[in-house]
Amino acid sequence: MPVKEIIDLRSDTITLPTEEMLEAIRHAKLGDDVFREDPTVNKLEQMAAEKMGKEAALLVTSGTQANLIALMSNTKRGDLVILEAESHIYWYEVGGISMIAGLLPWPVKSSAGAPTPEDVKAAIRPSDIHFPEPALVCLENTHNRHGGTIIRPSQIKAISEVAHTHGLKLYLDGARIFNAAVALQVDVREFTRHVDNLMFSLSKGLCCPIGSVLVGTCEFIEKARKIRKILGGGMRQAGIIAAPGIVALETMIDRLAEDHRNARRLAEGISKIEGIQIDLSRVQTNIVCFDISGLGMTADMFIAKLKEKGILALTMGENKVRLVTHRGIEREHVDAAIAAIEDIAKNSRAK
Ligand SMILES: *Cc1c(COP(=O)(O)O)cnc(C)c1O
Image 1: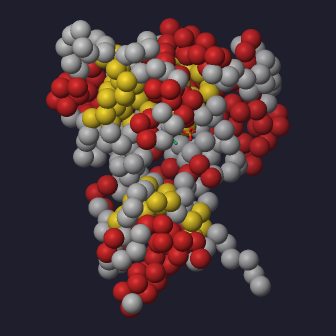
Image 2 (image 1 turned 90 degrees about the horizontal axis):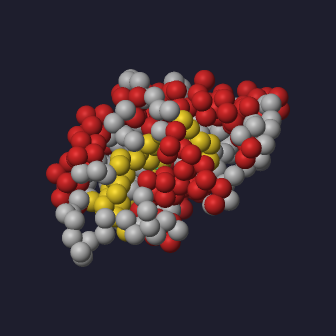
């Protein structure tokens, strides 16, 4: 029996390194990065800083570690951090913001990922014996739980003005910031110029096996380097991680447009299926979220049925399903996924 190809739409984190990346790893010049002697790491960090229009950069093990280091580098214990209520830091980072960084997260709701400047301002309470000191505002772009939505440069600018006026720093969880830049066809610096520091992921749509990069001022990165060491993230011949990162920055950014085209096609196909609700205006990058409550089953049941058809997806709550396009997902896979979903919907209606 021929083995049916699995179409894995769970996340862009499942992408494998390209042949060019594997070659780059094989030939990378290496040294001890704790002594700052790995030339490949140094090169990646320099490239990343330049690309983002900031002074310096630091390679770290994961996006979660990048966020934790940034929280700790931008604040002192006991401070208040304003973040969006659906943000990755608040939802998916095991509460490290409280447990390790010792901070009070202050969630602010939004409709598509960016709190309004007014809501951010309202969250910055005045100096008072009862209140912790507000120190930092965090944004996320693209916004994962809102469905890969883009926070526009003008929105970031407006929030930065509020934060900076009140003496707070602005940090960007830019795990997928290149998706935002490619989708709007603007230089990534349009997004980064208004924030004090940020991180981006190498290991998502950019297809590297490991790694994220923190970017900011020299002073911030020096602090971050020390905190990375505290957290056990000081690595030695980390050039084997940086080498594919360099390939990614040189060759993998523009192709994200392909993932966006496939996500659009997928979303439009799904939108025609009875019983499924999808907000097409939110499908702005490589993430497609939809509601299946009209099919009379839970999201868990739905993804189990999809799995039987060789398609892997994740749930985003009781009735919501998430599909993510990435390198390796072609148009024919998208069409197969639409057909499979159509089939599940048809069978549920027949009951
Ligand atoms: C994936 C993701 C992270 C965490 O990255 P890991 O490398 O998985 O730890 C942080 N923020 C956002 C927005 C993400 O999508």
